[in-house]
Image 1 (tube, one colour):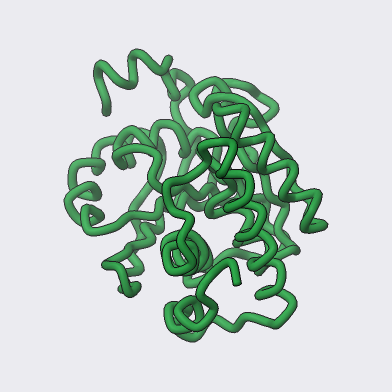
Image 2 (cartoon, rainbow, N blue to C red; image 1 turned 90 degrees about the vertical axis):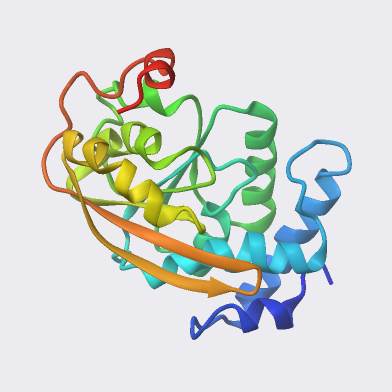
Length: 233
């Protein structure tokens, strides 16, 4: 067993999962732990950690309203989280997985192929993609987990979301404090924090911040990465 299925189910809190989905998650867990022996993908490889910190945490996105067939961007996907578990649960989604680390994306491509899943995989940086007309304001939903503080994350993500779409950053105990400090960034980039979906997994508190994109982001955003770091919104 590559992850603790009972602990996983305990943390689903009413989200239904089929035997086939459990089988795919187990296969993904096996691929992750095996590849991690030769490539540093994640520090979390124990069955309990995979069950809660990787799988239940990723699938908690289903607590938010993600429309059927939505075009979803996983910004900073790393080894495929939250995107691949989300796609296992919702194969109707048109998923794009974005990261700047090639070795992690190599694994993501291997995993998608082995699991029989379809998604677009992009090697690049969000601040560059956000200024590319092929990607700017093209996504119904953007999601992100453990990438940056919220004010910085909003500048990377909101320019990629369509007006009328939603950005869903996944946060832990810092969610309320980060939300307050990101107020200016959210407003500047055409967004509005609609609500926070708060819940607890067995390892601690979580929040899904639901940020609606009300209007187009000003053309100057996102700025170059160095500018974002030196003078965050």
